[in-house]
Structure formats: structure tokens, C-alpha cells
Amino acid sequence: MRKVIFLIHQYLGFTVGIYFIVLCASGAALILLENNIDGFRDYPVRHVSPTSATQSLAAMLATVERTHPGEKPTHILKSCDRGCTYDFSFNRDAGDRLDVLVNPYSGKIVQNVLWSRSTVGFLYDFHANLLSGDRGSTINSVVGLIAVLMFLTGLYLWPGWARLSRGFSVRYRAGRWRTSFDLHKVTGILCVTFSFLLY
Image (tube, rainbow, N blue to C red; front, side, top):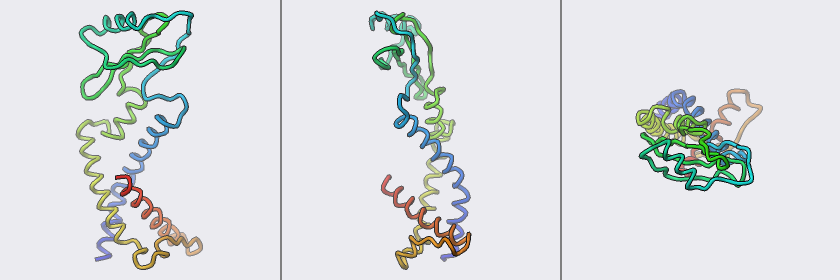
């Protein structure tokens, strides 16, 4: 039975390993971009030359609504205190968003940006849906279930059940294969523990 479970665990790792690397890399990029890079925002912003006076919000809104007749923005965002565009956002089909960037000093529209075509929008769509909508989301769900099976088989095979020290020891002088196996068992149990806590 242990040999069968080992083979299942091995081939599941081969099947979803690269997939997980790519998916985790895109998720890490999103976290870094949205939370850890100073000045980065998950909405578009353009810098403009400031002047002494700004247009009223009503005047900017009127310009935007003339450009997009029959639509109402879902929110209006002041990007920064000085020298940045205002963001007038409109919801679009399939969860997309249109950001209309307005120069608050001239009142003119600087740029229209679809969220799905921005850096964060592209990464999020790839991470959540593989750029394939509901089909990609379903694939992610199926691979998630496969990952659960991989975790469970890995837990069963973990040598720490017999003796805890064996489960966390790494023998660096026992040859490349043994060292790789020991690193795998230690990082594996840590990843499984973290995943269960996360979910």
C-alpha cells in the first residue's frame, strides 16, 4: 500500500508541480505589487502638471458623462493630493472595469483604461481564471482538489509519524538524493501545515 501511495504522490507532484509554481508566482507578484511596492496602486493613475486651480468635481463628472452617455460611474477616486489624475470608474461586463482618468487642473480626459488590460488586472485574471473565464476557474478548482490528494498522500508518507526527529532532519552529507529527499519532506510538511492553516 505504501508503494502505491508513493507512486500516486509522485505522479501527482509531476502533474501539478509546474502549474503550482506558475500560479504561486503570479499570486506572489500580485501581493508584491499591491501591498509592498511604494506608490503602486491596483488602479491606474497618471501624473499631470499641477496648476494653482483645479476644476470642480461636478465639471469633471459632466465631461466624463458626456463621453460615456447613459452610464454612471460606480466610484470616483482622488489618486493623490497634487499632480495626479482623478479616476472615474465604470463597471463593465464579465466583472471588468473601465477607469476614465481626468486631469483635475484642465478637466480633460487623459486616458481610458480597461482594468483587465492593466498589469494587475492581467495578473489577477491569469491567477484566478487562467485568462479563460469560468473555464479557467473550473480548472483551478480541479487542480486544487488534486493538490488536496497530493497533500494527504504526502502526509501519509511523512516519516515523522514514526519518529518526529526523522520528519525534520536533513542529512547534508548522505548524498545528493538523500539530501533532496530530506529537504522535500521538511518543506512538504511545512507547506501542508501552512496550507491547512490558510484554508
